[in-house]
Length: 125
Image 1 (cartoon, rainbow, N blue to C red):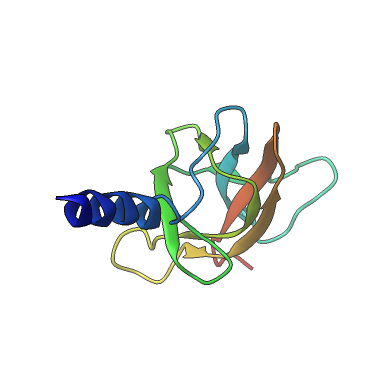
Image 2 (image 1 turned 30 degrees about the vertical axis):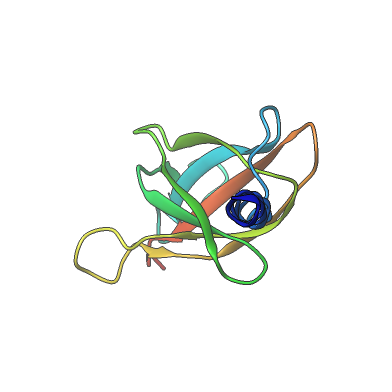
């Protein structure tokens, strides 16, 4: 009986040593956007990036997927994450090659949301 209790306690301790849990008030926020939107940008006619609804994968420093999220139709997102360094990679949209997701690195600090834009290359040149 004592052996069984010790085994259960050890299993729970090992399970608790996995990926750090997300902390409320700590993480990332921002927009997913695609650009450029014009072949030539002019001073009087800017071509800002367009917001994009997309699924984005969050990977830790070892490349392990921590979570994934979907931005809204306005491109906005907010995700709780534990402090650390991450790479965000958008998933391909549709069946073509464009827009092409561009991996983005971000550092998350305790007690704050780091603002970041996740970019997709529209292919317009």
